[in-house]
Length: 276
Image (cartoon, rainbow, N blue to C red; front, side, top):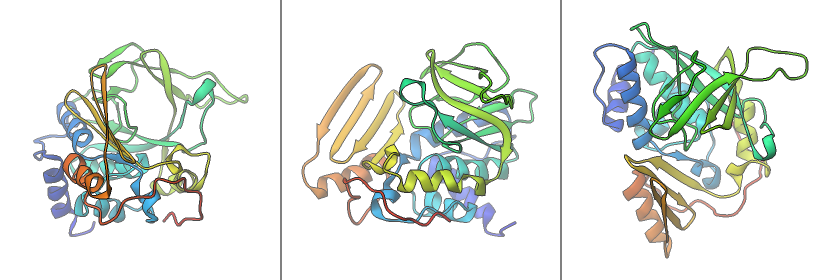
C-alpha cells in the first residue's frame, strides 16, 4: 500500500465534506455517495483542454483530491472505489453499456459503475458517482422492485439475452426509461481504457462535442456547458449566458471549485490521445 494513502484519504474526505465513517455500513455509503455527487463535478474538461486521462489509482486521486477536479465515469467512480475500499467497503468495478436514442446500446465499457458490499448485511449496492444525472442514493443491486429515490423511481431488472448468450446482464431504469445495461462480472480498472479512449477521441462520443461540467445540488443540478450556465430545481430550468472568458472561469471556480488558467475548447474534439 502506498504509505501516503491514509493522508490522501483524509484529504479526499475533506474535499467532499465527509467524516471518516465509524463502520462501512449502508448509511455511511449513502452519505459518501451524496457528498461526492454534490461536491465532485461530472466533467469532460480534460478532453477539451488536451489533457491525458490516466486510468491509474494514483493519477485519479491526484486529479480529484490534489487538483480538486472531477471527471467522467471512469475517473469519478474509479477514485470513489479507492476511497470506499480504504474505508473498509468491498468494491467491485462493473462495466455497462448506456442506452441511447431509439434503444441503441453504446459500446462495451461505455460506463463504469460500482458493486459495493457493506458490513451490515444489506445490499449488495449499486453505487454510482459518475453517471451525471442519476440516482442520488445507492440502489439495492439484487432487488427487482421499484426503488424510490429523490431523483426518480429506479428499477433494476433482468436484461433480455442477446446474441445467444446471457451473462445475467441487468437493465437499470429510471422512471421506466432504460439508463444503462450492467454486466455483473467483476472488472479491473485497466479494462476500461478502451472505453475511455473511445470517449476521449471519437466524434461519435458526446464527450468530444463540447465541454460540460455538472454536479448535484440539494434541490437539483447546476451545469456549465461552454458559456451557458444552467440550473435546475425540480422541474424548473433556468439558463444564463455568460459573457467573456473571465466570467466563465469565475463560474468554474464559484460553482464547481475548478480553477483553470484557460478555457476548454468549445469546438468538437476527435484526435489521437493518450489513455494511461
